[in-house]
Length: 512
Image (cartoon, rainbow, N blue to C red; front, side, top):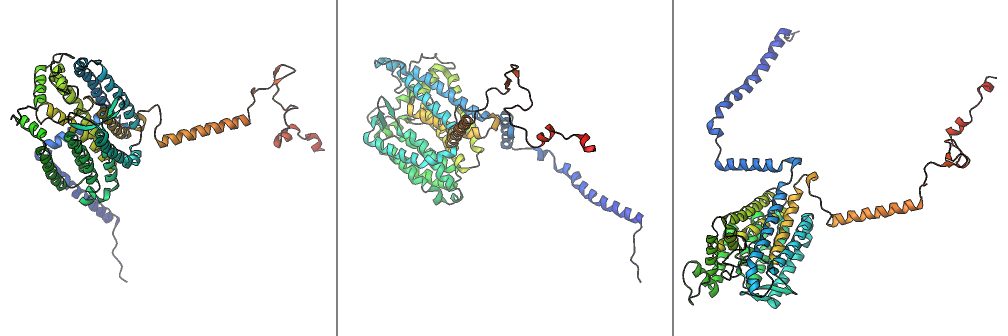
């Protein structure tokens, strides 16, 4: 027989030691090479990456992470909105009082109307901030159909002012359907694009039916001769497609087509041609200067200086700037509150835009991201165009400054849009830190309240059928004190083991 060689215990120990040293040597080799790779070149970061890291660190320190998120984004949006609305009411009172007195009206009439619409808008904002945004999908098609019907009614029974026909008179108030169409279109596009999430890589699914419906809305607004609002609706449509992830070449084609259409609309209107010529410093064919609003607005900004001439002390509002309380209210802010006042307004809009952007980037659902991103571009884009017109960077276009310019429809719709964003921001907060409302809105809250009331009524009926004794400790009528704890004549005899204990057997009888 041939015996197989066996290892001695010493040889086994040496083999184990060599096998343990081999991986340790290979493991230490990369560690030794790692410091060589991590030199000054590896530690260098691009400026964009450094700014990105600082921004993330700042927001993490501001609003916390994970379950400790304190909702600073929610309160930044809310605080900036309330501050801009308060500034708007104050400046409307200052800018409209002179012309109101000249017209024989109360100097507080415009400010009171603005305050009333602000109160209604704030109520709607808090109402929408407590509603789950998903429930708004059910009203998307109804909202866009109602907006289209109202835009058609404006052309039939609407009122024309300053060359634009986009108001409907409802008693003593006027309503502007084009402002409601902005929010309705944003909600509808977010709903449609959210339902077609998996098909958006194909351009035909991304553009249909969004592009035809948006073109119909823009066409109805242009039929009322309101180019400024039509431009904002174009920006809203482009923002919805951008946040939906549509390919960039679609935007290039759309920009060329829209630019050509805008040029045609400008050339075919003598009023718009005159505005463009006046903006470039030339004289119109009839010798008129339609850029005098922007010129006087620049005078107001220049005369304000650093700290302004004082609240209510503007001189340009004495009929030098038409619609001083509306489209050119930013010039009155610069004149009365100075550069500091205009910077405060700019900082508030910057805070609002940054906080809404934080909400947008945190959304994973297509519907939520498109809706919040569209609202952000709508409000900030409209504010940018208005300030560009007032400062002379763009031709005169009738676009109000969000939250500040006079106009109940614009303020109401802007506050409703902020309420939708607040609902998304509230959902990002930790459950224990979410602001609680006085009421529970929405179908789920209604069903919960109905179940609770039904349970309360059922418990009341059961309690009435089997009432409990009023006195839990009965008294002995003879001694006028508490009754003995043992069984009485009125109480039933104990059953089971209690009866055996009450009558035990005699142990003496058992011994016998």
